[in-house]
Image (tube, rainbow, N blue to C red; front, side, top):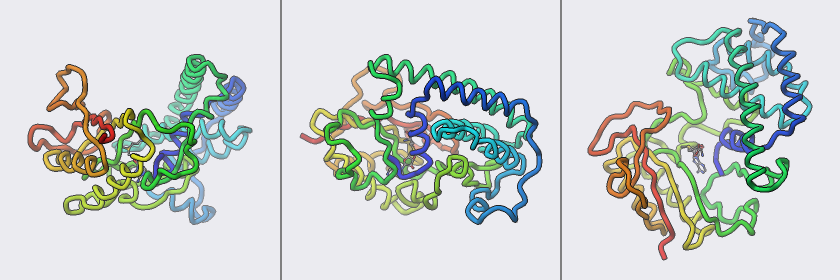
Length: 322
Ligand SMILES: C[S@@+](CC[C@H](N)C(=O)[O-])C[C@H]1O[C@@H](n2cnc3c(N)ncnc32)[C@H](O)[C@@H]1O
């Protein structure tokens, strides 16, 4: 469940198995692409409709030329899931070339990276879904029936008819909520680390929902993050109804200022009807019964306040209050 259509796209594509036929079709398509030289020409802005124009905001010319060149050929792939797989790889290439980078790659560099990534991802993803299918003792094509991707807010989610009743109570909730007070741009790329572009939505063929606070459970500069904690409580109060006393909730959370935000977070979980459990392992990363780690690929400036630096995230374990 995620409020962002982009996050839902990623989850759906990464859990939709591809067949031997899909793999072969995409490789044949890629062979034809590799034999061509992408044009450096960008589309004249006058031919873009208003919506596309919005999504291309701040996107450098080289990237625009490359993405349009691929999109012109994408329709040749017959199945939507094949096209979605290519879009997923394009997102990775865009992030590699543009997000918080000092230099924009040339069209030729974009193409080279795309070709390598598409071949590798196809191979690795096919092996991955095959291994999951073997382990689960079901055919590859049935894997997607074992998941639901729901694009909505988790607030008041307990009566969503898309959650199969036979799957409840859930044994495990594994989640990473928006981090309180931290400026992480989940739905944009930052060109030269500054100018934001909504182009990821365009590449994923999804609609951009709203501004930053929509994706962050509230404005990150609000006093005491009142909206954030109130909405967090609504989320977990409804998640409660999907669980029983054996269910485990595991969360990874980082904070801009853990000294007051972590206690406020734990209080909110308590108010929503949860009790914290201690991590049952010995580890050097354990502080006061909780495991901390450096956030992988962290993109925000973090300072050290108190015992725990804001560059770390914590794993929180909760169960329902009996
Ligand atoms: C730290 S990211 C985690 C992303 C992803 N689920 C993962 O684990 O890699 C936080 C996610 O929470 C989503 N989010 C924010 N508000 C939400 C809400 N009210 N309901 C559901 N998801 C929300 C954001 O769109 C963002 O994708």
